[in-house]
Amino acid sequence: NVFVLEGELLVPSGSSNDCKTVLVFMHPAVAMNMLAMPVALARAGCHVMLCGSRYTGNDTCLIMEKCVKDLASYITHCKHTLGFEKVILCGWSGGGSLSVFYQSQATINPSQRVTSPIDLTQVQLPAADSLIVIA
Image (cartoon, rainbow, N blue to C red):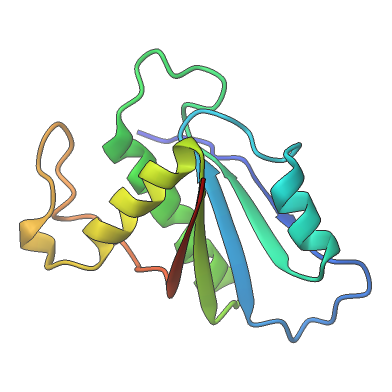
């Protein structure tokens, strides 16, 4: 199956290309590009990746393990394509539970990961370098 994921990288005005850290926000079902916190962080000088899952705008059949796979795609893209050395995963509201679940799966032996309803044992889950959970 192929899914198109839509994300936005917020780059501060006048930013140089030598930034090595990105803050990554993802909510399982809501687009975050119009929310105050990520935009304020970009205005303050942070590079911010806003990630949409395959369920953005329609969470009637949401499976959190598939959101974990989507988030892994963004983290991989940030590190390997965009060249960020450090990824800080930021969980805000419903994104908090997703971020904690993601990091818990990414930091254990793959054989110990969740196998139902979606098997994550064979999925590449690069761990974030840090995790921030915002109420």
